[in-house]
Amino acid sequence: MSLSGRVALITGASQGIGRGCALRLAKEGAAIAVAARNQEKLNELVSEITAAGGTAAAFQLDVADEEQIKATIKSVIAQFGKIDILVNNAGITRDQLVMRMMRADWDAVLQTNLTSAYLCIQQVIPSMLKQRWGRIINVTSVFGQMGQAGQANYAASKAGLIGLTMAIAREVGSRNITCNAIAPGFIETAMTDVLSDGFKQNAVKQIPLGRVGTTEDIAGAVAFLASDDSSYITGHVLSVNGGMLMG
Image (cartoon, rainbow, N blue to C red; front, side, top):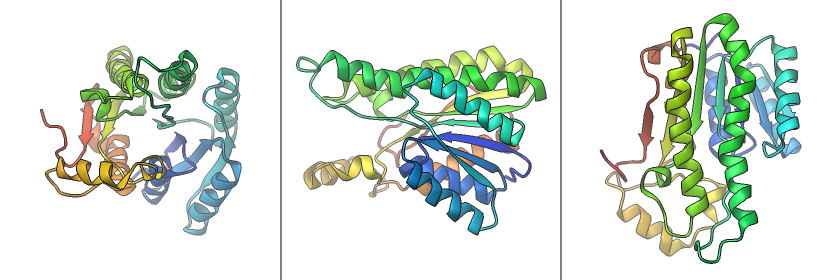
């Protein structure tokens, strides 16, 4: 699955799944542009990648800001010459039962989780069209497939990513650009650390493999979809959930 010569942009890369993807794609030989709001964590990640012999650069980015997205992607292309692989990973939660959910919390989650992916895709496609090769990977969620009480905004945003994935796959497939989604299940990250022990224990009971996932589990799937090994796969949602949801 060599990614030598490829350039990957990963959003939400300062921690969790995004960070894991950056490390794995760098290990496979890609040059990595990591983007997130936390500059300090990004710098630490870049240092880790370069210390291991890889190539990486940090770009501070709030994906809720359209102008920042445009400026950042221009900067990445200016520095690396192109973007071959886009991993739309940035995401937030603002959990609440729908009857109590504030409109601002609905808007914030949809803007960060879904609208930002559309904007990033729109900005990188010209680079991919020019070279007639590209890999777009959207990180959705098992809850975008099955729903989750108290997460109407999050589930809607992640379900929207699945529809976006399929639409983009149809639009750009003729140019040798694929667009796929990864649907993680229960993954051990900072986002899930805040959940109660009771919730976590109950979640594990629903997972046939009997454990929560790791960021490495997701990063391996992303690396596959970013490689030439997946060249005949597009518009697909790859579930990486330990069997939590099947079918």
